[in-house]
Length: 249
Ligand code: NAD
Image 1 (cartoon, rainbow, N blue to C red):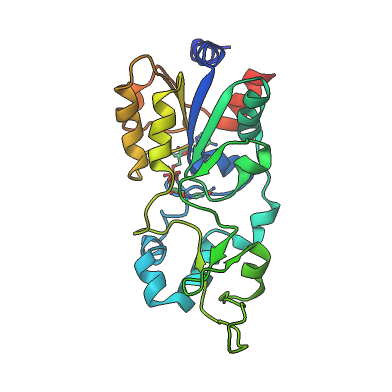
Image 2 (image 1 turned 90 degrees about the horizontal axis):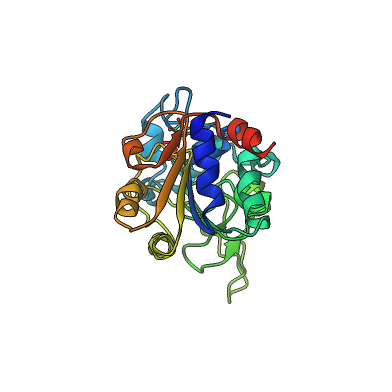
């Protein structure tokens, strides 16, 4: 085991309350592409980013849904499985650590892995709701039609029929649970940042804010360098599942 891995394990061993911040890199080894790596989802076509905005959805809801479903491989959603990285975090909890996972991912894999305290900052791909009557729907309903609509029956005995809005946070929507992240971070022993380029606001502000918290240790696992590496006690530039398997075994 190299020096960085030993430092990482020391930080984990000495922490009781661990705040984890994860991004798309967490799930690439489960077969879900990230956004900004080579071959990632954004690199091919920047107009995709515009199509994933609240503004685009509100103007062209019928065009939004097929693009959204294709981009996030929605049909495959149920078949993706957690990898060793997700399982490592769930295991830390079983070993008695107080682990709070804040994820930018929408894939639901932390919950599937068994983590009990998961905050989905960017929402979930598995659910959507009716902007008109508020009725909520699950994945099965969303996959049934190319453009999912509200099927609730109104007082006139007719289906509402409004096009649903995904529970994924679109560009232009507010990020969720962000205040909770800082409340919990202030009481934590360790911040663990995993698989995020830290390019998306407001999450990219977390390392600098964390740096101001006295006594808080900081560790990162990410394949590529980020603009905030210098603020961390240890940075592991390796694949998450590979690295966590190695330190667990
Ligand atoms: P990002 O694509 O900007 O960055 C991912 C980072 O992970 C990169 O720096 C890359 O080097 C690193 N990485 C990739 N595979 C890795 C691996 N196996 N091991 C270690 N590091 C690895 O992702 P982001 O910072 O999360 O921001 C992008 C946005 O993407 C978020 O808003 C998120 O909602 C959305 N997104 C989510 C999913 C998902 O739910 N799985 C997938 C794609 C995009």
